[in-house]
Length: 222
Image (cartoon, rainbow, N blue to C red):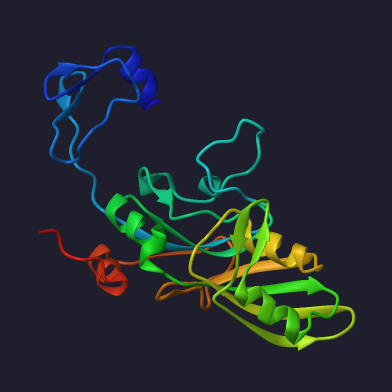
């Protein structure tokens, strides 16, 4: 919708008419108006959300798949997911409209941990667990987990707790596939200091933005 407003010539940045949707805006320093009316800065918000399996994390999907925003109240405003969970993965998803906080949480330099509970087919050995922490190449990319615990193991199935500090695309599924194990269940239970705890699938909880920033440890602006 906002891109169409720009193409229709309804948006101005610092009183200058723009028609290119890719125009860079330094928010909130730049003054942005729609139909000559100033767009006020939105209240910064932060949520913990239990993403159910079967939903994607984008606002819309050309294939018509269900998105998490079908489950969330419309009065949340325009928020985005911090990182992503694929359609078959459930668990803790962080949502915010604060781009600084989001960038800090997803920047690999900050080494923010993500903890997952994973079930795989077959018996995963201690040797393979060690190999996963040392790293494995797949399609020219190094995949590894920071830590891995075997919680329960049998010939039929193994239950794991895995910790990542960098979220590459489908990293856990790819890593375990290289090791010879198919993931049958994947759920994120922690992201940094935020935990899923007793949130049920589809449920959400808002955290005051100041508390979220303090918990994350985002450096204050100079």
